Image (cartoon, rainbow, N blue to C red; front, side, top):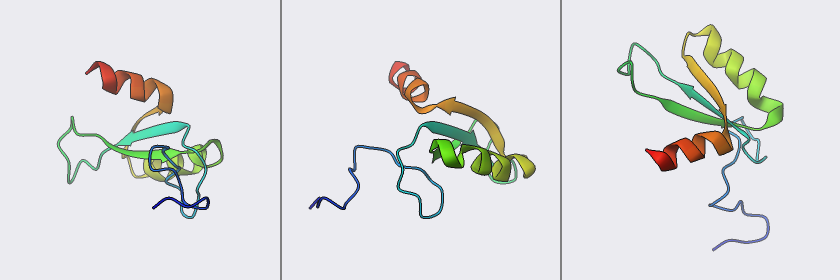
Length: 79
């Protein structure tokens, strides 16, 4: 049951801790010690958390790409 305070299950939200903002960015990453090179995991980010989450993944060498959510979604529909 969706109540007015519940997030819309169709609307992606930011992966930032405690954030409920709409996702605007997709951060594609993988951990080379765990995942094959072509595998991509994703985190979603709002404008406010994009830089922080990108930095977190980047310093670990995990970040592969940052793409606007609308572009990512369009590419997924084509494949």
